[in-house]
Structure formats: C-alpha cells, structure tokens
Image (tube, rainbow, N blue to C red):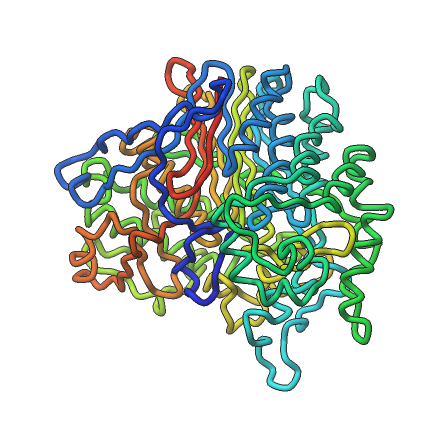
Length: 612
C-alpha cells in the first residue's frame, strides 16, 4: 500500500498529501490542456439521489475532474500519466499497453506514491477472450527474512521509532515486483502494436529531463528529510544542493533514467539481473556490512509474478470482480457488500445516520476477520470461500444492532466461520478494462535510493506483522499468520475492482490508494453507483467514512458533520476529520448506458483523467 502517510498524525489522521492515500481536498477548477484530450473541465457533482434522510446530512458538493469519450478513458493520479496512457490508445495500443506506459510515468512523477522499487496488483477484463484475470506483482520478503526480524532482542518488543528498520531504510524493503508485473501485462495482454521500449520512452523523458514538483511531493520530502539525509543517493535525488525542492521546481533523476533505459532495452531482465540488480543489492547490503545482508542477487533473479484466481461476488444484480489474497481487499469488499445487501440503503438515504451506522458495523466485522484470518495463502490457510459466502454474511448481519454501535473489543474475527500508493483505471475502445493499484507503501517508501540505480525502494516489510501485539503504520493489528518469512508476500489492502452489469458488461473500473482505508473507499464508491445511482462524479466526490475494527473509531469526512451527534448517541466513537483532511484518492472509469466512457479523478487529489 502506498500513501503519503505521516505516522505522527496517527493511522487515520493523514497529512495534507497522501500517496497510498489521503490528500487535501482540492477544489479543482476547469483545466484545458492544449490538444483538448486531457480533462476538459471539471464537472460539478450532481445532487445525490436518495430519500429525505440523504443528501441533507452533509453531502457536500465538490468538483471532480471528469473526462468523457466514446473510445477510451483513463484516470490516474498524475496528468502526465493519464496523457501518456491516452496517447498509447490513440496510436492503436490497447488498455494494457496504456497501463504499462502510464504506470512507468506515474512511478517517475509521483515517487512518494509508487515506483519501480515497489509493487502492485492488476485485475483485468480481456474483451477478446471474455475473461477476467489477476496479476500479482506484490513485493516478496527476501531470503534473509524471518519472523523475529523486527523484534528488539533486548525487550522482546517491536523495534521502536518511526525511523526504525520496520518503517524506513533498506531492511524495510521487500523484493520489488512492479517491473515484472508490467512486463507480464505486456507479454500476455499487450497489443504488440507498440513496442515495449516505446511504451517506456515517456517515463525515461520525465526522469532524464525532469518534471514539476507538486506541493505534495515537496511536503513529503520535507517531512522525511532527516531520513533521506542518511543516505547519500537519496539526498542527491530528493535534496538537490541540500535543499527541499519547492513546488513548481524541476526534479531530475538521471540515474533512474539510465535504469529505465536498461529495462526498455532488456525487458524485466534489465531490472532483475545485470548491473541494476547488482547495484540495488550491493548498495542495500553496504548499510549492514557487520550484520546480515538485506538482499541477494538470487532474490531478484528468482522473483516471479503470481497469477491467482480473482474473487467474485454479486451485489443487487451486478457482478463484482476483485483481487484475492495476499490482498485482503477483494475478500472484504465482497464480504461487506454481502452484509449490506440485507438493507435497503436507498430507502435509508445516502449518508443518513442509519446508512452510516450500517456501513460502520459492516466495516467493523470485516476488519475483525482481516486481523485474524488474512495472510499470504501460500503460507497460511485463508478461508476465502467462507468469507465471501453470502450465508456467512447473513450470520454477521444478525449480530448487528440496528440502533447501537458494536464494541470492537467484543468482536472476535472468524468466530462465526464454523495501505503511499496510487491507482490507475482504464477502458479502451475494444472493451478491455484494467484496474491496477501500485505502491511503495508509505510516503517515499523506505527513503532509500539504491546507489547509482536511482531506484527508490519500498518499505513494504511494514505490511508484515512486526509483532502480533503492535500495529503497523496504518494502526492495523495483524495476526502471526502475517509474520515475515522468506519468499512470503505481505498482506495488503489494495482493492483493484471491476463491476459488471446484469448483462455482464463492464460498468465500472474502481480503485484507490489509502492503506487500510482502500477497501472501505472502494465499497462506498461501488455502493454509491449501484444503491444510489449516483453519477460517476458524485459517486466519487460524496463524503466518506471509515472504520477498521481497531482502533475502535468511526472516521467521518468533514461533510458529514450533520450525523456526528446522532452516531455518537448510538455509541460510536466518532472522529470528524477537518476540512483539510480527506479519505483516499480514488480513480474510476464508468461506462454509461450509451457506451460513453467517463473517467473521474478524486477531487481530494490532483489527478487528471483523460478520454477520447
């Protein structure tokens, strides 16, 4: 999971700009890009649908960047990436080619969120074969990993401090999977009308010639300056001349451009072998010359993407396809939808007190299961089929009090069984659809640039359970099933999702960064589209809530102040976020009844969709 996450604010009180996640609400005015293809203005959110108890309770109206087209549409967190992807499709490439090009671009221009030193997931619909699939590019624990690696031998407790090995530095990094994942996408799904090398050229250009620093990136560099200064290569990239780059200044990454050129020339082998892999391994290990090495070249040479089966659910006549474990996202998205299917949400009214109460209780129950039961299925028994079974949801729903909040300390996960990041959503003119969530985990990942490779490594080892009694960066507690082991993939919340209508046609491509808030955000967007028949821009911009079992707190965005008192009266421990804080930074594409593709970027972020 990637996010510009600030631990000093607590797990769900994010800083102003977030990479897997939370960002300042930006009231985005219309923006006209020369050529007319990139975000032709920001569309005003429509009035919410719902009963008398709906929109009056805090549905604020913000402008969401919208792009419409009959052929293709793409939504990303960076305008450069959206334009790169649209250009590929305009030249005859398909959605999968566009994903490759836009992913490499966003990895360069949003290093606080993602990068080739990280990983990700892909869920796709292949229109020609009429089938869905998943590609797992999650980072993998190196061969030196072991369950006690983040335990202080003197105290038996988790290594302390937000700059400890568990949070920052090369030991916090897993073996990156993003390049292998994108190469797999190209090899198995790409049109081959545009070469692999050509798809990487825009990213190489932004790395070599530079890009304009956003306020969010500048803030993240300032926030983690102390850590970046520990590593000469990191300081050379992100603190040029010893200073934090200001918004609007140009940031160049010549070493990264060389690495990207090697990948362009040699494919995935250009990253997982040769001088690039050696440089990453040697520079990481040089930080621990007197202790166990971080990586070996074999860790890189042996990396393999996963091809798991997608998880499928149904919700009010729609099919939902999402990512399976080691992500908890798809499982718990379907689980929560199953619970909510027992309520007439539209009748209750959107974001009414009763609606939010039911959302919170469904979230509480699902996240209790997440804490106890989810991990890499190659290393632990994960009861996926039982968790997404509607009969199980019926049992969970029966435990919900319609008027009073449950108590998380009394909810035992599995008792009834018997994570900063970025997201890309694309639909092309052939009907192919792809959702990909990508990350280096928290803002600027490990803060470690691996020598002359220019690669900023992830800190994904933090998504393992460092200690069963200690929360990770997102306040989430996780079981011993998720302790680190060599070759193991850490648990994730990333939830790239496809929604199909009753005729089995793609209706929506949905995903977001946001750490543990990812699943609940995707849940609300999907429900907004289906239950309340919101327009794509309003489904995106409507205020959000979040609950994750522990801490036992119900977070409300500022637009929901009208229901705060009533929810508190029901026993919820309510935290109203300030107007400067928001939940997640989603990217969606919706196909409307007439076939028009509508791409929408979250107004909480700075993304710009594109369409033709």
